[in-house]
Length: 232
Length: 232
DNA sequence: CAGATATTTTGACAGATGACAAACTTTGTT
DNA sequence: AACAAAGTTTGTCATCTGTCAAAATATCTG
Image (cartoon, rainbow over all chains, first blue to last red; front, top):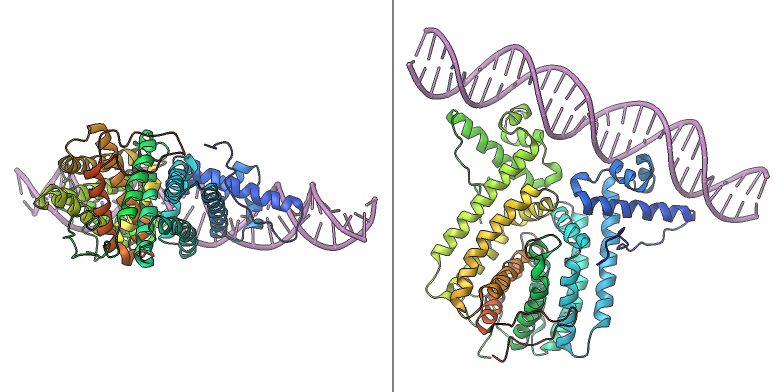
């Protein structure tokens, strides 16, 4: 549960410039992340960021030609780091498909309990509704997560058609993200996150395994019949 | 799918004052909601709200002694409306417990596809991380939702101990809320929301039915065993 | 170490923001 | 119609915001 001074950013090396340049670049983004996590978007101002990293406000305009630019660079660094850790979690994997899926679910939910993730993602979700660039980058992030999950779901139930599998996978990811608001850092069900890991794993693995082609075909709106997946 | 000019607020009648007073009060909150939904929190300024409802900025300070006050009043009205519609959806219910649960799930996911819900809730989630009053009111809203769901879950599986039931219920609600970011208004999986309704209903109803006491007891972190609930 | 380039500070700007007070208008009641 | 209470506008305030340009400093290369 890393908390200290937000190493959870992935930086792309800049072209040209002195070493100090990259340093300042990273310093600013770390400070921006820190402010966003600690005080929210309302408090994310150039002067606030500057104070946090010991630079002057004007200097930030040297690195980022606008505040929106800075926010997008921050998102890029956050998303990159997130993608990298998922990638790693997938590799650590496990022995069999079900175990792999279970472990990935556990990893995601674990990460959600960190202060950073609990605080950052709702900000990004909110921003994405009004900033197309943020929206696109978030979609890319979740798209990559979807690829990984989809592979595992396929391994657990190879008989599922790709389109149906895609939707179930998206639902599973969405469901996991939803725990942010309920069992994330400082939330009322935080203490129950371990049980939720168990529940999520059991629930989704069992459902994917039992699912038969056609199960997820939608029925008439508002009158979905309650039934376990197929006869199985 | 109501979209026009946001009737989705529940107002508490004010004590004393002229009729015009209540009118202005509601006008302002409707405008605030409209701005928040259309342009996000960044654009939620007194002058922006004023422009939207044809009043002058100074007037808003007459109704709300601070901007935070206004935001909290808005949250109160939004939460009240949301609570009322859930209440109603629960009453419309259905015949048997499983059907009731399925219908409530369908209602929630349906609501999530509206522009208002998709846009408002991420803003509230973000705010709640840094405003204790917002956090508390949101918790109350979800607490009431939890009560309703918990009752249905109990009816579907009466053998489940209350504490375990509470956690599963919280997980289900969290999972549903999570679809906001993936299949809400304008999101990439929006078109698959009908299938997700089916999936969510099947998945959660089946899981709750099959669950035996002890199933959700957490195992060692990161090494949760993948298994369907109990033998069943 | 000289000099070119990169970084940093300083200071300033126009515009926006939340808040407020005083003057003005409307509303409802007697 | 008179009048007090409620609502509204107007104008103003101090503060904050993002951005920029010019001066000052630091860094690296040859």
